[in-house]
Length: 116
Image 1 (cartoon, rainbow, N blue to C red):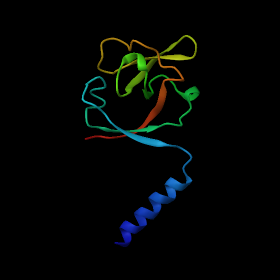
Image 2: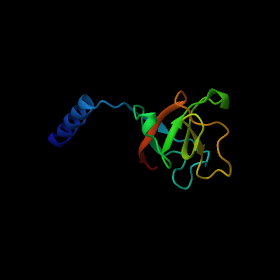
Image 3: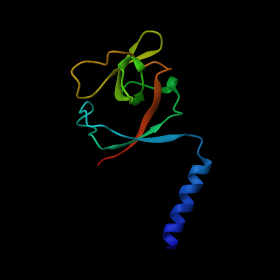
């Protein structure tokens, strides 16, 4: 019981001092990011990671209403695009994403994965 209480206190202390907001996302089974990530994997996204600090290879979440999707997209940055935008692609997709990642569509950077 003491051990559980200690873990809870450490968790709460970490939450109180953190200046970042994280949220989890249950990856749908689309297969676009396999084999790195699969449907049901729990993704942790840092929603305050600065857009300006993104780099090639980062996996990020974004939501662009032009896709007519109820949820966002989690894909990898594969290149630079004009006007401070990024080219995105699912690891298992043949083609790159139709729309560029922009600062106003960026949701957060992947920081951790709990594999199913």
